[in-house]
Image (cartoon, rainbow, N blue to C red; front, side, top):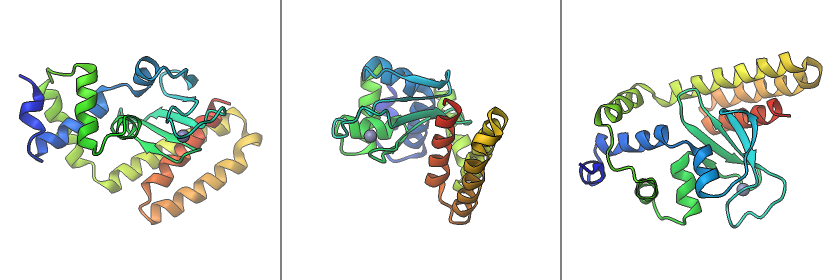
Length: 196
Ligand SMILES: [Zn+2]
């Protein structure tokens, strides 16, 4: 059965979990290489990488585009040049010029031939998502970035200690303001430094 018929028509929890399903299922790194023809430079293999920004209105040579696998198994991207960020859904919405996240979702499913969705797997994502409120997500990102900071200090204490202390300061400010985007951005900066 095509999950499209069942889940996408009504804004039910089924649809919500379909978003989560695709975010967990599609490997953004692989997608960029095979569908967008990006050449990735891995900072840490299978975990974080960078490349030239693939968005057509951001022409650059530097490689400001970064992606990383978060601890809950979802790939996120962030471009330091055009300041776009998000998941595979956000990427495809902008890249293919689609109107809504739902259009992007359908486009991805069509592109990748995702027709037979494992309903049980999908349901499990839906239930994790319910448990994961924003605060929890913030705390997870915070823990993730903190562990990246520790790795940086281990790598070269002298070189990174100043950056790490400023990152902690910015992270604490962001936590106070429930600003998950800033924490995510700091995570991308740390990934880049790990790959230096
Ligand atoms: Zn960009």
